[in-house]
Length: 171
Length: 357
Picture 1 (tube, chains in turn brown, blue):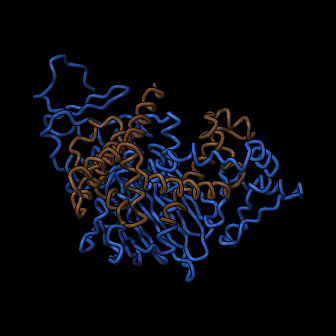
Picture 2: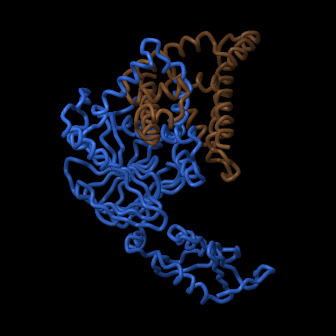
Picture 3: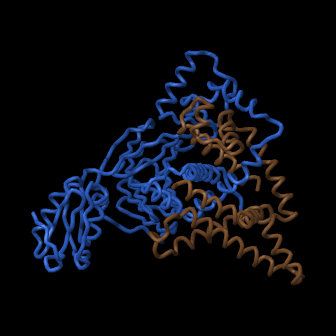
């Protein structure tokens, strides 16, 4: 049951990933963008009259964030100078698939992220590679590394937080 | 936006919380109460939202980024398997020199390793590898539980029911993060190390004083019993509110009020004496307060009873006395079963009457 719910959240997130990623990537040019998005997402969540109606706040978070990111991207395009109708249509299509510019940014970021990962403590690094590249469960990783599954979660949590801050500081 | 070192420290803490929640979500092991705790955490600050989304994006990039063609899996596993000792950081060393470069050479001496392992077990097996963040210590109470600890700096920490805090010692400060619930601090004076409490977006700094912090879903209440503290919120970083003894500040959704309000600080901190004190408070609030401690929830079923005004001092763990008091009220019926306590007016008794005691 939990798997079904997780799969749904993953799909939801994957479906909107482009818009969200683009939003966070814009930090390079405009640092406050990601903060603005988070603020707006936060305010919209606070405005919810009936919190109990939201069964899964995480999934809700992703959908609110994605919609806002898309709205923001659309507004940005409208603001842009000399964007013809045709170009706008193309931009819309590019927003669905990764754009050329987006790919360069992503490749650069992947390179940076790879460098951050290499600097992680060995067990942290191993846990991340086993989970995200080899698709192993925490239980399986625990056996590989001779630690408890709880410890594996700690390693993965440490790694995610460390990577997140390092990437954010680089902008 | 330029971030200071302190901002980054706070950010790193929040990112870690976000990452732990993210891992728990993907693990699919969250129970109803943890799910609620997550909702509360996420709604406590826009910074939490930002870090959570940031962590989710990192996780999305990891299948590609962690697949490093230059480092084969075997090499990673070998490294992970052979440097066990280097992963175990000496807790004491971290407290004294938190900014030291992590020593990466394996500890060869068996005895040293044993000491390190024992220290690591002493903090619940929680290993902290990043030297920028010394080993945090976690203190928590369950539902209806209250506990008191003397911290290593001689400050005293009292935790009320359903509370979790994390304590970190750094050269320039003692940092206490309230994850949830209510804590009272008796701060040991240390001129060179300030005492800072973070509750969501609210920051409280104190020097040699006594104060209470209660963090609930979207607000944080700071009550000062002795001395002075300064309260700030992440959303208005330039503004600080100085609160003297007998003053109270409500930070709601990260918004700092203009002034502190005078309160009866002794009454606000009556929980320390395992008492609950009310002065002209509505029954709904009184019941909610009892429900913070009791195993069986009190349910007010007649809406008009919610606004009934009550005064008095009760023992926090003595719900019976409070119920006995309610039974003395005209027209009020209290019905208790193993799983619930129902309070209603006679006139509103549901069709099937159950025996009343």
